[in-house]
Length: 281
Image 1 (tube, rainbow, N blue to C red):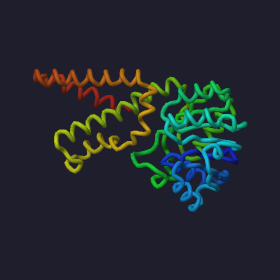
Image 2: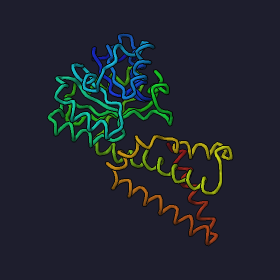
Image 3: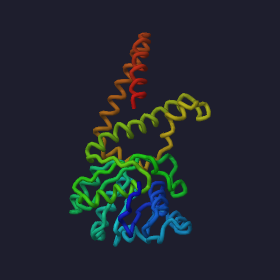
Image 4: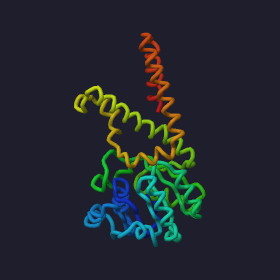
């Protein structure tokens, strides 16, 4: 099934893994839009231009965001929040979206600025630990879930953003911003933090990455993620993150007690229950 791409002029702010992949994915559409992009490190944008993935390099983020049909903020959350405040006056009638991991902070700012009807939050559940334009790929979003939080946006703008992601091969999942953000704490933030703490424990025990088998490598992969991307996300959802950590701590306390008391039947019961949960998905 084909999905019509509704935008002729697209501005992308940020050409790292996500923004670069967006540019590449848009370029291979049957009727690609004109893409103007800004990147903090200009060499990444110049490379995208030389490769034909974008049509022009903007000298500033404001230039990339002004006079477009669609503006995409492919930056960390705190940067997107700051830039939205700085750029709103130049959006005109553009539809505005993003790729950040939390949606309510951005939706709130859009409302404060008087642009709630134009902002459609997006969160692709795609990516990796590699960063920068060189890590980008045209098929990064193919087959992956993209949460779309329409909020107070006009229905035609929501439909247009959903069609954009579908045109890239993604599976769109509409969701309320608050529900999305709570889900992400448990589905994304907690695994990230657990991976960091597990990696630290292994390092302090003298282990090296080459000592790990497939399971250990899987569980510690997220430790390579960018701290710059994560700090603002963790700050904005701090209370829910604390609840998630407390739940994890309760589980570790249970294991400590069970193992110290040699209650291996209880450990086995936990393993059976979690195996059943995992296989039901």
